[in-house]
Image: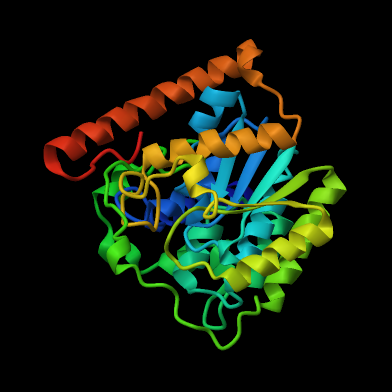
Length: 352
C-alpha cells in the first residue's frame, strides 16, 4: 500500500510539473511566430523531395505550395529567425532522422555570422526540437556562457517566473496550437517597395573572410548530404537587405565549384526570375510578400527540375490529396490576408 501511495504521489507531481511547464512555455502565437517553426515540422508528412534550411531568407521567401502547384515538388522549409549555420546543420541532421530528401537547399546568408546572435534566437530555433542526441549537440554548440543548457530540455527552469506574464494565449493554446506556417513558409501579404533612390550599400569591411566555424559546419552539411546520397544546393535569396557583399559571394561560388555543388545567387538573377522590387516585398526589400515568394518558387523550381530528377508527385493520388488540403489552407490564408490589407492596412490572419 505504501508503494502505491508513493507511486501515486510521483505521478501527481509529474503531472503538475508537465502541466506547469506547458503553461509557462511561450506559445509564439500572437507574437514571435518563428518560435513555432521548428516544432511544426514533426506533425508534417515525411516524404519531401526537397528540404530548405536557413534563416528568414528561407522561410519567408519561397512558397512550397507554389512549388507543388507548378511542378508537383513536395518540399518543406526548416527555417528560423536568425538561424545560424550550426543551427542549420543540426536541424538538417534532425530532419534526416525522419526522412531522406533528394535535395537539400541551404541558404548561405548566415555564413557571415561566426558568433551566436543572442539567447532569443537560440530559443526560437532550438526549443522546439524534439529531444535527441542531435538536440543535445545543437544546444551545446549554441548556448551562450550565461545561458542554462539544461533549460533547453526542461524549459520550466527558464520560464518558472513567467507566471507574472501569462495571457489569454497561454490558456487558449494550452492543449493545442494553431499552425503559423505552410510547410515551413511564413506567409505575408502587403507591399512596401524598395527605395532604390535612397539605397545604402554595405559599409566597407576590414576583412571579408567568412568565419572558419561557418566553413566547418558547411563542410559537415556537405559531408552528411554526400553520405546520405542527397544533392546539396547553396542559394542566396534575392533580398536587398541585409547587404550581400561580392567578396562573400565569390567565396561561396569558389566553394561550390571546388566541391561540385550547385550555387544559385538569385540576387543576380532577380530580373530573369521576374522579381519586381516595387511590388514583391512587404518591408522594403528585407523579405518578400506572398506574390514574391510564389514568383521565386516558380523560377527556382525550374532550376531544381532542370538539374535534378525530381518526381512530379501530382499523379500520386495519396500525395495529391494531402497537398490539396494544404492548398486549401494556403489559399484561404492568402485571400484573408489580402482582404485585411485592403480593408484595414494590416494583417490579422497569421495562423490557421
